[in-house]
Amino acid sequence: MLFVLGVALGVVGGFEHAWYAGDVPIAAIMWLPVLFAVPYAMGRLIGGKTGALVPAGGWMLVSFFLASKRAEGDLVIAANSAGYWYLYGGVAALVLAIMVTRSRGSWLLRH
Image 1 (cartoon, rainbow, N blue to C red):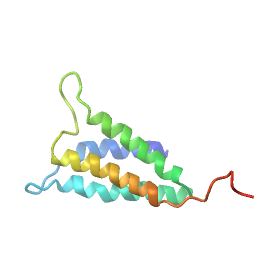
Image 2 (cartoon, rainbow, N blue to C red):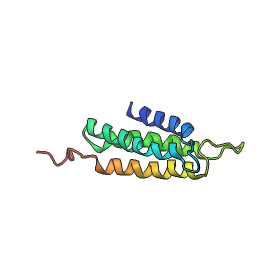
Image 3 (cartoon, one colour):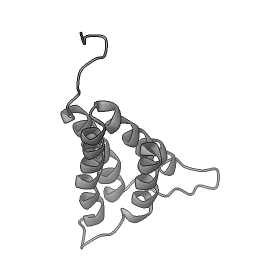
């Protein structure tokens, strides 16, 4: 379910990230706290980094698929400021969420 949650975030974000307020890609920037909060919350609920890593993987898989050019020349996440903020900022937010998620420790090191 966590992977499906990440896929859902990627699909919705991929189609809704390109709203602008003037020249500022406001929707792409507003997605960044969401992309931090969801994996961080899932990692905290599960109790380990795997809980944060699984939805992040689903988001990355879908988002980079939507950013790749198809044979027809179409793509969903364009190479513009909104696309860059969404993709690169999203990856940074996900990595940060995974890094700050506490882990209970390795099962190998428990007594």
